[in-house]
Length: 305
Ligand code: HH2
Image 1: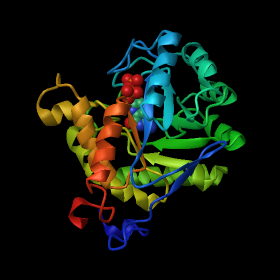
Image 2 (image 1 turned 30 degrees about the vertical axis):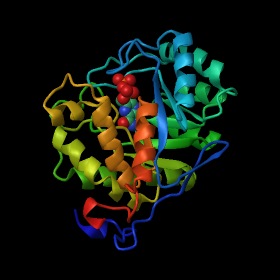
Image 3 (image 1 turned 180 degrees about the vertical axis):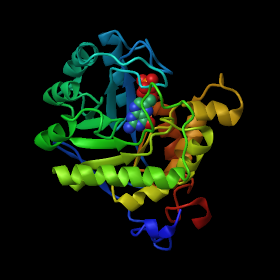
Image 4 (image 1 turned 45 degrees about the horizontal axis):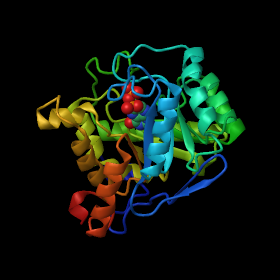
């Protein structure tokens, strides 16, 4: 993609990189090492942990475990968005997530993010104390979502997806995946700004696995640093995803170790937040990687080191 599409980029100085994310009531400051968003799926059918935390007490226990392991954010989701997952009603999603949110909000010290594209769910979650709207549709899925974010001052994560979970893996196609994802996120960022969301509350996410083939996922992972050109925190969710099995030529492989590989590559590129299931493992890898000099040198493509 042409460098002129990245007016804020200057690889010689390192690209512009957001150094904090303003949440609804507090601020997350970024250092060199990425912060970790721990995943809590209160679903029967999530692709890697479906059914493990459907019972509210199991979910609450897992949330405390993730926080103790060093999660910086807890992301609670009540509907699986894996390929071909069946959508559920807002009422069902609320039945799953609200008991968990209510048991945690005000007690857990880390901020809570709600992984939903439904404004009815987001509204109740924010009322219970959530700070972040993590919307896989980048606020396109429900017309009430943008105004809700403006009204409440919630932080938002805008994620790229081609199609919907029901269609996204039916032959996804791009001429220039990095450029197209960049442009999509720029347009969604600008729509959020025009609606009145403050710039410091917006994060962007290339949506690993959402309407992408292996080559698309790898191009996005290798070029995640370019998203700093949007001047928003960059969040990436590689955790346990199918591309790891594809790279290994073994879809049954334990993908936790491959997740660590992706996390280190993203850390090198200055990605500010990683959404992961295995907080303790990834955190250990990142801490040692940084101590051993893995984060030294300018942010950018591997050749800039
Ligand atoms: N990935 C998943 C769900 N939500 N949100 C963001 N911002 N980025 C991601 O990459 C992302 C996300 C899918 O992972 P998981 O929650 O483990 O699975 P499922 O959707 O099956 O519950």
